[in-house]
Amino acid sequence: MNTPKLTLLLLAFAGSLALVRPAVAADVPAAVPDKGSITITHDGKHSVTIKAEIKTKTDKQAPSADAESGADTSATDGSDEAGDSHGHGKSGDSIVNIGNDSTLEAGRSADAVVAVMGNATSAGDIGEALVAVLGDARSTGTVGESVVAVLGNSYVDGPVSGNVVAAMGNVELGPHAVVEGQVVAVGGALKRDPAAIVHGEVQEVNIFGAEGVNRMGADLHAWIRHCLLLGRPLAFGPNLAWAWELAAVYLAVYLLIALLFPSAMRNCLDTMEQRPGRSIIAAILAVPLKYVAIILLAVTGIGVLLIPFAGLALWLGGALGKAVAFAWIGRRLLPRTDSREPGPLVLATLVGALVATAFYVVPFVGFFVYKSLAVLGLGIVIYTLILHWFPEKREPGVGGPGAPTGGVSSAGAQPAAATASDEGAAAAAGSAQTASATGTTASTAAPLADASSYERAGFWLRMAALGIDLVLVAIAIGFLPLVDHSMQACIALTAVYGAIMWKLRGTTVGGIICHVRLARLDGQPIDWGTAIVRALGCFLSLLAAGVGFLWMIWDPERQAWHDKIAGTIVVRDTRPRSLV
Image (cartoon, rainbow, N blue to C red):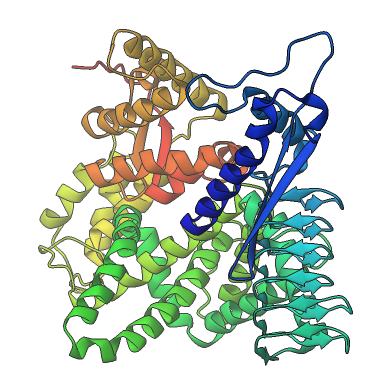
């Protein structure tokens, strides 16, 4: 309540006491009116009414006045009872609902009636405002200030002391509408009864028409309620066909990118498959750095002109990256082919997009998968461009992109073979010698022979090792008084423990007991980047309802999602190992 209203209230209350006090002092109960009221009007807009009631009883003494002020204490009690008689409708109450409708019945009053993602309806008296966000505002009673609907329609058939506004909605005034302020319809239409009275200005900005606005409001309301609040971009239900149509348009764009730019797609896919750890790190860093770049362009003055082009470049890179992410998923589900035609690449993009869409409709998982693929795709594209502009310097005898294509001596190929595991050492060395003799890169052949020689660990063996590690971490947490003893803390510390053990020993305590260890597909030792990326990927496998861990059951390489992200496999290890 603002200062003018408070001043009026105090004046009215003092006047009511002045009327009541003489009668009480004379001790003539019969002459005292049962109820007294006084009304003060300020500027013709605000009115305050104070009611006081004095009750007398024959079996008790008349109410006594306060010794110092002379005020009647029973008047206060009477006013409290009068206020209670109004129940829910007494002044000072507000009706606010989120996700549901707010309704004020006739004969009741409230300070404000607000509904977010619902309809706000009032047939009573509102002291301040009637507001509906993503819903309709309907008033047939009295409103002390304004009626506002955001992404909804406003209907008024009663007095309103303020404005009537509809943003992206229609405004309708009934025959009993009396609006003291303005009537504004932005994006919708205005329908006014000839008997309606508007003292202020009338503004109508009709963009989509009345029916178009109603349809848009219903569609957006359905998407927010069934998709946004449940953490997913897509869902099945009424008024959601437009979301699926938009998704189909984006899918067509991704397929067109795979059809028109197959070389760029393959380069990005090769980057992801050959350098999964660095691609993930580039994706994580790309999120904050793109905003930093835009801020730097903005503060330089002349760079403001480049912001639209930077935004367009990021959008194009994101679209290409999303197509790459879909193709990367699809290539793991389809048979590998060496064809350079765009057909298999388009098919892989389609299959990956359909798999991702299946996750998009899962509550509280859909948005996570959607944003993860977008971030991953953009990071792959940026890292591929970095490798193209700044090729990595490699020593003689080391294969990969940018390496020499000529013959390599067997002496240079032998160290590459020596880094292979014990199980595949002989096969890797033989492949290296053959590669050096035929003029190919030694390390390109060695990892393939090394990876194929590994015996993959099964699902239950890996789960047994993981269970042992979880128990050990849980016991360790019990001895750490400063660590939160919760399941979330146990999972987080298990990931940290796993990353450290993978880098230092290539396995964990559970892996040593169950005779399993971690290896990279390219035959290289586990580095910090691979270990950290695999640990972070475990959270993705877990958040997707554990599907990422179950993926190893039907995957030909027995890889979970975090294995595919980090480019690793879990193999049987029959050699006895120790922690030291």
